[in-house]
Image 1 (cartoon, helix red, strand yellow):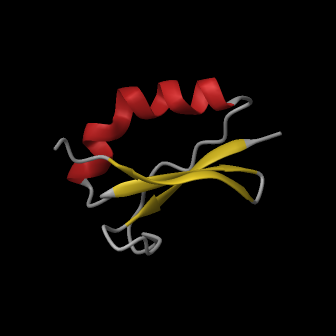
Image 2 (spheres, rainbow, N blue to C red; image 1 turned 90 degrees about the vertical axis):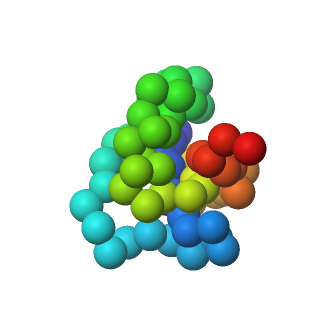
Length: 68
């Protein structure tokens, strides 16, 4: 299993037009911990929400980075 984040716009489109971290994680917990430490930088880079993928399977999507 390899876990990674897909970076998305507010409408759910994938953000591919800028350099963003392309980390791969051995576990879901590692991926979620990394996001907890880096979500502010991602938001500043124009990422509005993320999806967590396990290989090509979507674990969950639509996780907003902007505090409500």
